[in-house]
Amino acid sequence: MLLHLFFSLFVFFTLIDNGNAGVTSSFVRKEFPAVDIPLDNEVFAVPKGYNAPQQVHITQGDYEGKSVIVSWVTPDKPGSSEVRYGLSKGKYDFTAKGSFTNYTFYTYKSGYIHKCFLNGLQYDTKYYYEIGNGDSARNFWFETPPKVDPDASYTFGIIGDLGQTYNSLSTLQHYMSSGAKSVLFVGDLSYADRYKYHDVGVRWDSWGRFVEPSTAYQPWIWNTGNHEIEYMPYMGEVTMFKSYLYRYPTPYQASNSTSPLWYSIRRASAHIIVLSTYSPFVKYTPQWKWLREEFKNIDREKTPWLIVLMHVPIYNSNVAHFMEGESMRSVFEAWFIEHKVDVIFAGHVHAYERSYRISNIHFNISSGDPYPVPDKTAPVYITVGDGGNKEGLAARFRDPQPDYSAFRESSYGHSTLEIKNRTHAFYHWNRNDDGKKVKIDSFVLHNLYWGQNHHQRKSKQNRLRSLILNRASTAQL
Image (tube, rainbow, N blue to C red; front, top):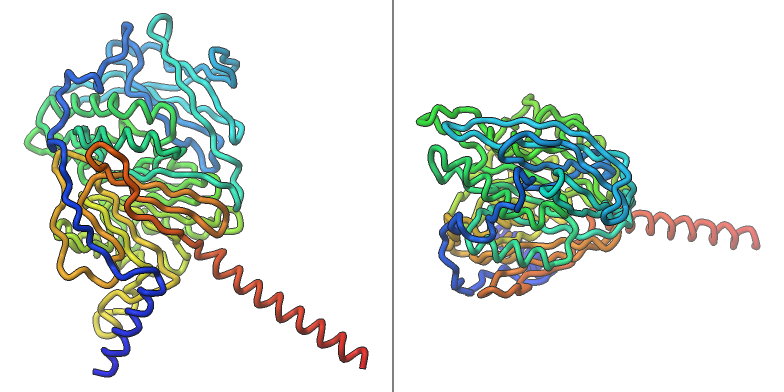
């Protein structure tokens, strides 16, 4: 009884130290219809010109941020896989040659999917690029990140479970006005698997055009969710992630990964790890072995911010998908704490939730605390599966709200993480409130590595200063 009372008081005072006790928002979303936008809507418009490039998107192409992968589709014939680019609009001093492929899915046959690496780019520079030829040529631009540095400031957007509904459009438009430089995407892209037969491929194409106003200009760091699996034996389609793997390349080889589904990059002052929830991850599997080695490659003196992306949240108090992330938690949570991961973003649950810093690593079936406890060395867990897809919101949270849950709301939106320096970042969750972007949940994220090491170094400096002063006083005597 006394032990239980002590633990309850410990939790209470720890939560007060974190800021507030947990909040379940009472906001009721007046949502647009949770149906996909009709294909004849202008947001899916095919660009003018014969065989004009469409579905243009870019992502980081290497480990350090000096390369970009440009991808696009030509619908009628291969055309050119060349990208012309330079530092001035309309003046393209450089040329890179790529490759193309295509695939079939049931009776659907894709267009020609192009992929081209632009290597050796300068940091913190705006590049203009052109793809296609003649009257069908199209022009875009992108900005490279600052050089990898512990105090490089940078703003990421975080989006998950987007789809192609009117709610999705609201999320996308609000994100594009946020000032963020790149998207960390936590899986479930097009929701094309909600269709059947030929329409699966059609809805992949429409989604590529839908997000192009952002993806052609900013790198989206991709991750997969359950809606990318597309295991459909009734159609004879049993290759997992088939459409995604053809359409959305990742720089997995740069981090010595053996699969495009899990990889890592360094960008500005952040080291970002992408994990695949729906690929084997238990001990001895390729993903497990890769992550064990990748943690050894992280240099927090250069990239102090350690961010992990996954699809299924390992802490979730919503009725939807409750405890689905438990298996990954049991395998990786101890590593996340050992290596001082700052924040973990997930999707899957169509709502928003943020945790306090907590862990559940002491329970070993026969002994130890069988529940999460406050842990200042643990990550903050944030679920942003609220992009707006056609399945609608996950409106039912478990009651009572668990002690580890800081804020939760069933609504659509997106997040931003504004890294200021090696010690502090500003986080915001923005609700799509009746067509307006409203900042609802925000906090200052303190870097685990530099925060703790700063205090240790300061303590050592004070001890050294005291030692020198004591010796000087002794010498004078």
